[in-house]
Length: 169
Image: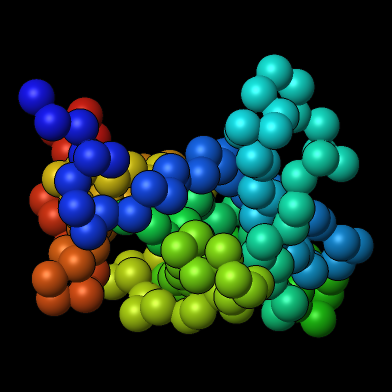
């Protein structure tokens, strides 16, 4: 059996093994920034101290707290969360958020790409769980609110509301 590296025309460049970790940095009040750290697994295989990573993505604007993180292809997707609002009496009211931001890891080899705002979810999701399956990204609300379940179909690049999972009945 012929190995890929022996085929003419194919690059002998071996894909780099990188682990991406996403962190939220909460500031006093209602401000949060998210950081995406990249760890070179060929360099740091056994211990992953944060100082050995490079920050490849950072949000500069005020984003919702408790966003969900998912992966779809080469994209790291941030979605949902809570938008904190304070009324005049000093009371905090959380609103489920529909915001979606995308960071393309394929672009971070040459430069530090920005987080790009993506089409919003159909409904706000509180503490969302995000999972990729069969090239589609699924988002499930972490707290039981209907409609709780959506899917991003990459062919149409839009979110579709799905029926509630049986566990919610």
